[in-house]
Length: 150
Image (cartoon, rainbow, N blue to C red; front, side):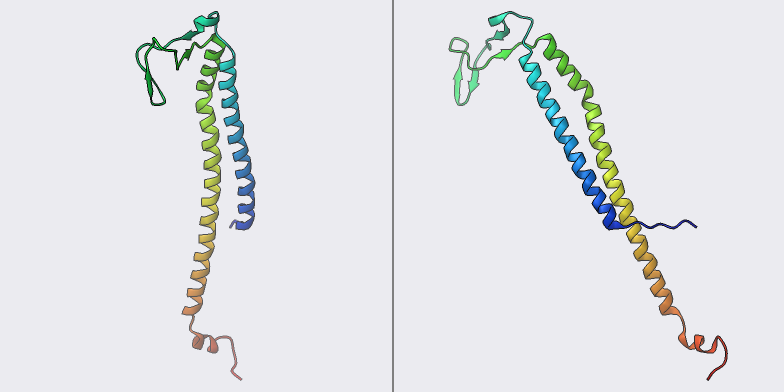
């Protein structure tokens, strides 16, 4: 029969290490997405100069002020160039991969926690069963077993 020797404190220590690495991964992925957004915005467009900014049509709300297209354009939409579009497509295509990384980290940590808790509960159940069995032993019957009386 196989025996197990899991030390819950050791598992807890390792889970803290893994948690720190998972946080680092989350920070790196967040930084990557922020850098991609910044790069896409800085990449420019294939449209020359002022043609890249399209004034809004119809009323525009900015703060509490409503201004129409005749006033100074308060909001503008910058056209996306081919590099920005490619970076956006890259991020969208990798979104499932990024989510899978986070999901796998979480599943591994939660699985280790659940397995360790089950192990501890099994130990407690075995100890409880052993105590109940010891209580059920008839001590008077044991006195007569084993030989001579003195």
